[in-house]
Image 1 (cartoon, each protein chain N blue to C red):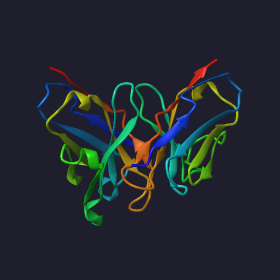
Image 2: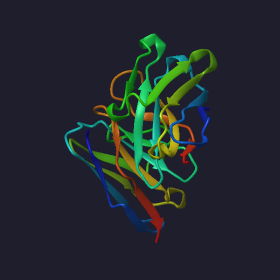
Image 3: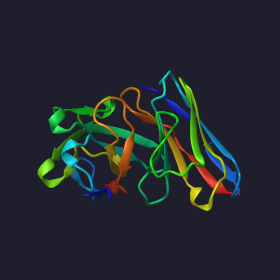
Amino acid sequence: EVHLVESGGGLLKPGGSLRLSCAASGFTFSNAWMSWVRQAPEKGLEWVGRIHAKVDGGSVDYAAPLKGKFTISRDDSKNTVYLEINSLETEDTAVYFCAKELQRAGPTPLEYWGQGTLVTVSS
Amino acid sequence: DIQMTQSPSTLSASVGDRVTITCRASQSISSWLAWYQKKPGKAPNLLIYKASTLQGGVPSRFSGSGSGTEFTLTISSLQPDDFATYNCQQYSSFPWTFGQGTKVEIK
């Protein structure tokens, strides 16, 4: 059974940074392309970015407006994908989800999601 | 960015009702559209992808149709477990974008 468990959220002050983790199990993580999505309170889902499998180059795609704020990385030895967020702003307050893409390369939906981790940015 | 517009925002229905949710894209996305079900505090669940392909394990009462810019999600006979929020998503081009969601409530 596939499990994705996000962690690392919490209450942070503006200007700070943090790293979220997403621990994966139940599938061959090293072959998976992984995405991050966030949902601000009372707002819709917003795709943040994705990381390719290292066997496919390991490159990262970001939503253009968010590029520079986020860094996605992975550690296949730990079956974990990370999302670093810097220069936190109150607008970054959201639940952050990681998700496994259905297939490698090409247009693909998000097959499995974690339950999310809440990041609250407030002074 | 491709804008995804869902309607209605909220839908009140009874168990057994046939329910239809519409999703419109601001430009053609071919059939690169997915539907997700979201319940509070739980992970979103992929229901349909490529506009009409049912994800494994999803009940057959769920169906999707459409191509280009207009898509629908239909629940043929609403069950108690189906009261949730439904989101469409285009994965035709970056950035992938989602509709704002349709909340299906008990009438």
